[in-house]
Length: 425
Ligand SMILES: Cc1ncc(COP(=O)(O)O)c(C=O)c1O
Image 1 (cartoon, rainbow, N blue to C red):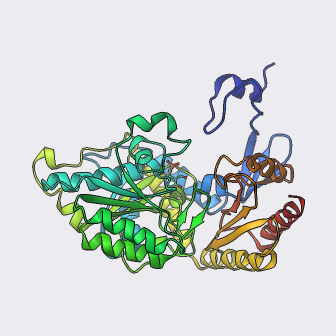
Image 2 (cartoon, rainbow, N blue to C red):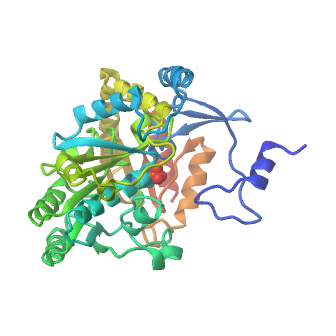
Image 3 (cartoon, rainbow, N blue to C red):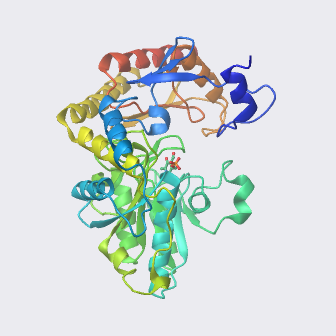
């Protein structure tokens, strides 16, 4: 009889995975609970990366599951044009209560890429509706905003975008704004702004996730945002990864004094249970769409826009996130990361170690380039998986993005394994 793994191999095409005859078997997950993924053959794997950075309260959370069940029995889905429902209204109200005060409207979609796609289109049409030609877009070197076409276009050109380069619209990339490059990046940015043609600036605030958890200072970003605003440029913060307290504050933008005009959110929004994206904007952006003319309307939507199941679990996840228990866990994880950094800093195998909030990144010294293609990736991945810890390094960068329920003892187990690994490389 064909088993599940054989069927998986025969029928299913998995993402980000080279397809060939000797493709390694996927690990079959039977169920999950808390931070643990349970395999059919009895293994219990720590999900130290929150399953692609989405799972914030742990897996199969009973409160979230209860909400999901209740909502499924009441209203599983309804078209969101011309109709509305309580979970979506409630979630918009909750988000607006904590987002920067200039943010006034919530637009729903269904994942991180589409949240950015909406953000980019919303900003482009903001200019179009007013008949203003400001067609240049600025993004950061190393940026990753998702895999749909608009999101790819504003992302750095890399192995992810290579086959599609000819189809992507033009974007000006400024260098990654590290401390050392601050003055240079500001000059680069200003000279682009001075053309008067720049309409959009999009960035991942403070951490570039997919680029290897590259971190930069709020001071530099504040300078860039201030300049952008002086030149009447719409600023889009992609908080898909950094939102929902991943960096220790609700948004990475909360570390800034200049606020974006549009923010894209997803990942942690439903606690990792349902796909959902939101794009939020200021009154100024929304006002450019105020017109009875259909040509001025934002003609964008998805079949599952504002899915009630997703919005309902997002509401429960939000409530849990705001509770003292969760907030203190977030602080504890951030503090643990800092003391671990203190403990292993200076280890000869470490090229760089950094953290912000619940994110910890360790760049391993290597003779190869520090990027996604670094082959240390395979060694790191299998080493930790053999120890029943799921860490999915970005090239030579080991990172931890744990669910917020992760205990000190569980973190310690992961840290100890990392220390052992460092002594082997
Ligand atoms: C900053 C950022 N933006 C957008 C995305 C794309 O989100 P999704 O995978 O839900 O399309 C990601 C995913 O990793 C991300 O890190």
